[in-house]
Length: 354
Image (tube, rainbow, N blue to C red; front, side, top):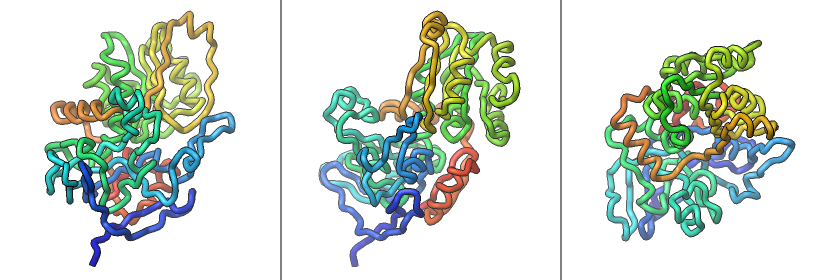
């Protein structure tokens, strides 16, 4: 009898995921078959499930027209055990527990050649977005080099590092170490934002101020080491923040709405730096003259590279990072998990256990 895998797929955008059984793929070349242990549920999964990314102003990127073809198994935050290897694999061995780097590119375009496959300008092959992902019992990884050793890290937490943690790490790396007296603002305390709170002191030297609409998420941020947590919608919130800090030197917007961008950008002091990460959608308008006269910077940051993921895992293994809140659910509850995320009911990360 042929060995099978079970997966939960987007068969129709916006509709419940469909369970499917398929023959186990056989790895070729340097490929590796991974038996999935844990897979995080990410906001990008929600966009794939819904079928579009909102660009603001009524514009959308439709997942199917951008190369995400159905049926598709979502999931890109994956830790599992090597179950089989292709004949050319050398480092990967059966039984190893590994984190999967999912942001796979074409391998030949300039960003890929520079080691930035996550910014691939060619035929992207990202796991869970353009290729079947981790909402499954097994996953085919095209090359063993995309497997990262997590050592003795908690595998359920480590799986979130493939996207949530990596995205936070790459954004904070763009800010770097802040001098004494400089403040860091994190806008949005979802899964990625909370990972940034956990990383902030180790990477920037500063405990961040966190802005989020949800009091439960603000409390979670405080538990992870935030210096303060504020409601950006509260009357006079930005004015009070500016008075207390003189403006923050750095801000990271993990929400990505017009309102969150405006709050983060408007909270910068002269010479400040805003890193924009969130993909909830919207259009921002800034005064070019004020932008120039204040000498502020604005950077976009999209997930991160394989090298950065390895850096982050090394940091997690050596620094006492606070752990992101994790809610475990069985793989069969993938649709309900996406619905909970969409409804804003998730603090930290849902992790599906295969």
